[in-house]
Length: 324
Image 1: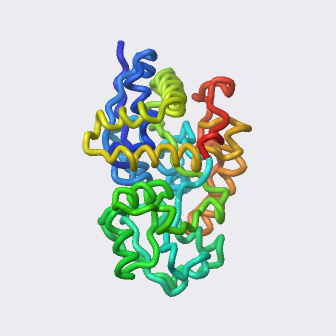
Image 2: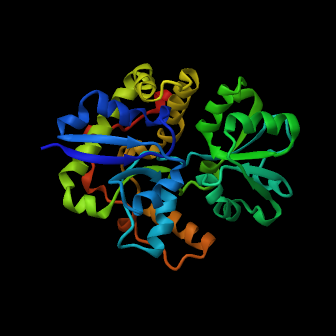
Image 3: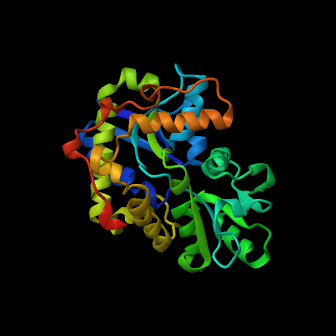
């Protein structure tokens, strides 16, 4: 009997999701009797309440948003079961030719963000960690794409910084016909908030309880899809393009390779393997989030992350340094 799985993603079909799509196209899901239906999302942070709200079994969501939810609703909120990012992917991208070189230089500036952007949702934490008084910063919410935001920032000065993922902003800058290495400077959260994680595969507590073997099979398949994506990034982007024929191949290949080399190549992966998360780091991040947001409690690591469904360490990827 085939197990149907409804999987809610963090965005439109794009490069960094390629391991999920290769897991489907290369038969890794079907080998475990799983058939996955992918649905496009709007942001990594937004995926978490969508999963909690019902209608989906699995989501690719923001671990920090999950921590916030766990502080308030530990029993019914989802579980993270696979930590995709072992380094925070979030950034504030600024004009490489501009005056902003450090977080404190943001005081008195105007920034822009998508309404549900995970980086903006962590701005209080960023301020605590860096000493920036975020009350002095004006942030405009905008539905424009980064490929539009970057030229506007550089050409008009309407904004002086853009919230987002490092590699998402970079890829959209390529789509805008600009060289991200020449036009952007990044204030990367990983340098200032090293305790924070990024994206994770999450499941509902009900799905985990009723279908534990399906969760194990799902993660084994994703692990195999990740290996396939590392071995052949071009095939990985082809899997994305089969689902999104309009995708910019060059930009999304750069986005995938950048994600592998930056957000998934932390030293922690060599110690515990990609997919796992460090309990002490989860709690440290949760303590910072609780302080910043005035949450009622700091959830335990076991409330946030369940590693019992992971493939054995010897079967998982432990180094992506060659992609850095």
